[in-house]
Length: 539
Image 1 (tube, rainbow, N blue to C red):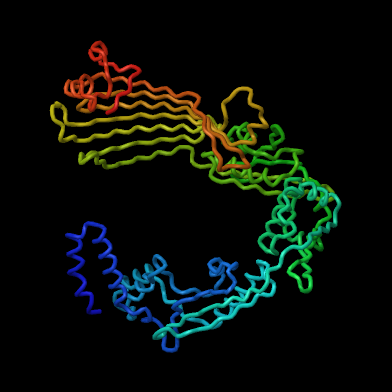
Image 2: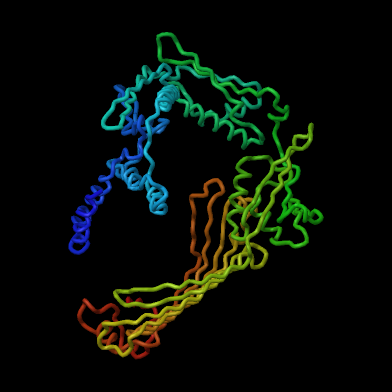
């Protein structure tokens, strides 16, 4: 490790003069050279080999080997920028003697990566995994082989060769159902079929079709169906790459006879906290409340955010939508929905919804340092939030912020300081406060209405400014498409008042003739009044 002492002077030199990109590149190259000084096979045993590389190759250009590397059971050490095994070399910097420099060794080994030792068993498992991956993509007669090569002292390279053979395609497709009603539902949605003649016999396509059918039936009131109800039979044709594919929908052995029945909810129960603390049941618009002695949230809010109700048809999207709707309420920490089947021969379901709440009040403080063009300052803020103000999941947020900055380099101004304080208040409602909105339409969307008022006071050497802002905004998104969000600003008012304007600032920026400096043209009456109305001033 004597090279370390020759490298240090160059690093010091670069830190003083190498400020450009070339200095960074040189420092990076020197660092890599320093890491390379330690052998990567330092921790490789006597009869062991470091897995230097693992390649996958094939003569069939239609097979993408890059997508198949992920199935390998043993991969070489990771590389930086796909070029250099820096994590392995960092690990190699640690010492064999673990009794001394324990912390240093532990840190290096945590940051680095232990050497990957070649394992013939893992290589054979990788061969089998590659064959299975190819067969799942329609290459039913695919094979793979492996060869090893010693590339250096205690290093081996493994090369996997793929022999995919011909790819099989769907020549014809048929369906078999053990229930006429299930068949009717599936065939009625034929436009959404993912399988058709000419597609490759790809396992991912077959699995996607199974998921689609199960989801479709889940939206038609069928509860408890899963992918094991659907199986495939593929008959290959002799001397041809075509396959006769049959999709079979059959109830597994021992399945309840009610599996194919349309399910409705008999009861939808809501619990706050522990079910042991429940009070007598209270019924409200198709929901049964067990809120206990201490009622945390209004029943109306539950109704607007819970999709299932008594006698409503079971739908899987109802359950997922309820999770999303309840999770959007800041006052709720977590929710759990348990579906129970009532005793036979009754085919109805019960939904038990348990809700746990966050602490209603939160207080926070922030302290920050500022630097504006070399002018240093400090700012502090205090935040308060009430997540359930009127027991309707309304969120009240209050924020007070103050900032001070010492301004230097301004000529012709009396003051040298900048002082600012802001007060902000907002109230957010968990629904669209719009009259005449149908209730059912409101339950299909996640929405909020927010009222915000902000007052800002700024005292600069150039001017003093007061800004008052008020806004009313709506935000919403569909339960089925939560990533697509909409916002509508119903009202947004801004009032700007400037009680003080410096004479220097007035002469240089408000009343001059040079177009480079004149930002706002004002009349003498406006300048004397020191009030800017319906004018925009850039500071």
